[in-house]
Amino acid sequence: MVNGKAVASGRAVGTALVVTALAATLAALLLPVHLFPGANPVAAGSVNFDDDGRGTVATEYGPLTPLDRDFVRKVRLAGLWELPAGRQAQERSSRETVIEAGKHLIEGHTELDERSIEAGRALGIELANQPNAQQQGWLAEMNAAQGDDFDRVFANLLRAAHGKVFGLVAQVRAETRNSMVRSLATRANAVVLDHITVLEETGLVDFEALSSDGGASRPVQPSTATPGVLSTSRPPSTPGEPSDEGDTSAPSGAN
Picture (cartoon, helix red, strand yellow):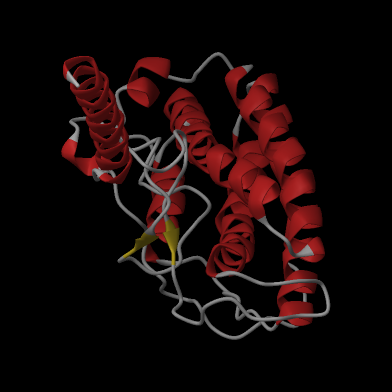
């Protein structure tokens, strides 16, 4: 009986240890990740978006999410200030690389503008007809600059804006289940990368200012701001979303 009791006792201890280990593992899995400093349950490199509160709706092109709609609006808004900026570069600069960058901006955003208007009509997304107040401020800043100062302002404002949107474009392209939005994001990805490249080739981009601007990577969550430009902060310094001034019904055509 002594040996029998010893065996039974050993088995009981072993069972208790297994149960304890399983309980500890379950507790670790259930422990909220936000209790750990620096933990982020959302994938790194994700970005904010503006939630219009309409949720996900069904369309003939597939489900349309708030992120999808925000992306289409921002593509349209980007063209409303970057097309005039490109024209300014071609008309006012004497630097060949800036003139070339302006040409790329005009060509790229003319195409994206048409595509975003088409998507807005097909998907029932309201689009802006004019730049918002923040975008108008950027254009005014370029208007006030002269000579080499204009070239620097142009290159840095536009490079910062395109750098911020690059993550948004990639995320929409990876996540959307809407074929029309996916097509727009695919083309926008190529256009934005092209614009980043030609802006950097001006030799005027202040990379230190770009790298010191916080907020390039933020969790995917609706922001409290309203739809703005493709960039999510005032290039290249002040974080925050632009306002929605000028955000009206879908326009009848491209610029």
